[in-house]
Every structure is written in structure tokens, then in C-alpha cells.
Length: 182
Image (cartoon, rainbow, N blue to C red; front, top):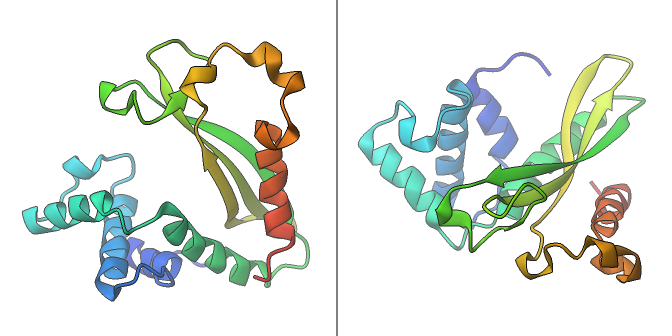
């Protein structure tokens, strides 16, 4: 894919998002463009107007907007771009998004990094075209958090049913991608 401006990239990546209101999709595009323009900057530090800042926070707090609805738009775009390549590698990895702030202690799962850390885990499949040395995009992702009440029970891993193991989620990601009609 050619080099795009942050706004054009956001339109391509998130324009297909089905958020039940076109204004929500426009807000998503606007936020994504602002974040792409200023990588690594928190929403509260973005160089946007106070009205856009308030709109961004309303968007983030809106219970009617689901992460999968946003992600699916990007997956569809990746699937479209994947058709341009004769050979693709599906690269998989699980990432731990770790937070230590007290505001997330009751909502995220445990980590193996101490009592204060909380995390969201994401198992992602990234498509790579080796013939062109190009990252095509993210095609699938499973997200979860570990049950805090089960912290320290790793030794019981072998006796857990397969569907309760994290490795099940890895397989689920790949199966969903392989069986997808995209």
C-alpha cells in the first residue's frame, strides 16, 4: 500500500466500521488520524480542539461501541489487501498490555509480574507478504484477561480443560482466520 496521510489511512482502515451511526464512524476516523499524526501521545495530550477532545472521550466511554466492531473494519481492509499477494505468512503472537494504574486493578486480569500489575492479553495474526517484504495488516485478534482469582494456579494448568487454556485462544484465532469468508 502506498504512503498515505494519517487522515487517508484512517479513512481506509476504519471507514467500514459498523458503529450504528455514521457520526461514530467519523469520530473513529478523526481520532485514528489524530493518533497516527502523533504516535505515542495520550488522547488527553493530543493537539485537538476542546470539542474534539470531549467527543473523543464520549466515544471511548460509549458502551454501544464494541472493540470488535472497530477491529473488524481493519480486518476487512487487510483481507482486501491480502488478495493482491500470491504468498502470505500468518505471523502470530500474544502480547500482554500491562497497566499498573489503580483505575484498572478491578477490571483487568493478573500478570506474572507482581501483585499490582494488571493486563489485557491480545493474540494477533499479522499477514506478511515475503515476496514484497510488505506487512499486509492485522487479520485476526483474540483479546482476554486472566482471572485474578486464579493467580498462582499455573501448576493446575495440565488438568484444565483445553477450552479454558490460553493455547485454545491461539488456535481459535487461526481457525477463525482460516475459515473466514473474507
